[in-house]
Length: 118
Ligand SMILES: *[C@@H]1O[C@H](CO)[C@@H](O)[C@H](O)[C@H]1NC(C)=O
Ligand SMILES: *[C@@H]1O[C@H](CO)[C@@H](O)[C@H](O)[C@H]1NC(C)=O
Image (cartoon, rainbow, N blue to C red; front, top):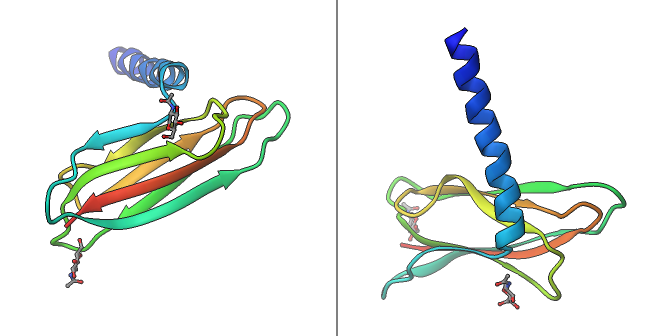
């Protein structure tokens, strides 16, 4: 019984976290680019708008065993569509990262996702 309640709380927190992110920020920026770092990957995620639908897509970058990610950014391209982007797993200090991009209801998204590191 206790376990069920704990699980519900976690799910609710995740859900409201996503909502808050959607309202407060559309661009993602974590970490710092240091001298010697390279742009390991630039990837564009694009979805056209769909009526009454929230759309999302995950981008996964995987480095090798020696890769260290120093910064991850996701920047909306063009006029804002009120979308949001956040990190699902990995990121700064890891060798991989998963970024989720989610549209606002009835809108699309267009993001440039950059992964920096060495
Ligand atoms: C996100 O980045 C774009 C491009 O730099 C900028 O035009 C836009 O204002 C930014 N959005 C927010 C909410 O900061
Ligand atoms: C591992 O990835 C780094 C970039 O993070 C690259 O510079 C390096 O050449 C790669 N090493 C191998 C063995 O593929």
